[in-house]
Length: 320
View 1 (cartoon, rainbow, N blue to C red):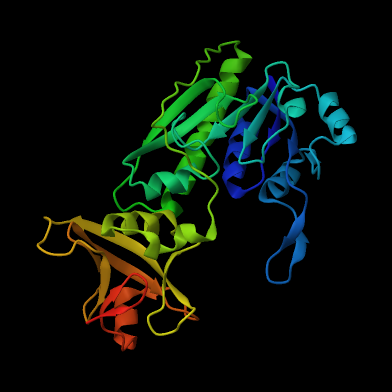
View 2 (view 1 turned 90 degrees about the vertical axis):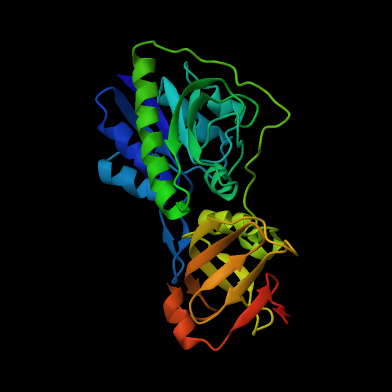
């Protein structure tokens, strides 16, 4: 068996921890996760999803505030792990990732070297990619640049959303980690250096404006950004009737059309039949809407109860 310490915090990482703990070739001797934090409406102190799952299995859980803390490093070293497995965790300092004899394995949600960064799944959807994947690689001193150990590809459907792709990616990443650690146990490793190119895309941490659709310049980009923000945080536009408020759009479908005559600017239309985002190259139809202070609802239900009609710029200005 290969002995590993698992580093992870969110639900995405739980899927991998579950698969590793069920593998006959892997011994998860401990888990490192974020400290318990206030959560929920009552802001009660709650363990991370990974901590909760590990405790159910009886796996020891470490919750360091600082990864360079002397006591934490001593406890980590005493576990004598062969390798550390890292999934959806903060950046590790060299004193941590270099500790095991086989180094540290990271599972990243893209086909590296493409989409290095904190949010590869969301950015892949935002770009409208028809293919994505996961990479198992060895950590080094450069973010997401370590030698590749294995990769797996996944097809992405044209209207697929983050809500459906995310669990598929988590499951594929879990199986990839099991495969790589099984190979480690058999001393089968064939790392390869990541190729470099000036055209590689990045996947930086998402800011609040990632979900703001008015900054985009095509109906296709709007469609893809809606997919990338569905189910959370929800892509949004400024309200045409309530200055300072925003409404959210979900479940978009896109249809390309020949370039029309005239302006190629992007705008949206609300009529008695549907909510559409249009430009000269295509139409994105919105199937679910969440108006300020309201619940998420089918567009047909929203249209029945709303008096808003007309053509609007993405910033919410009515077009005569």
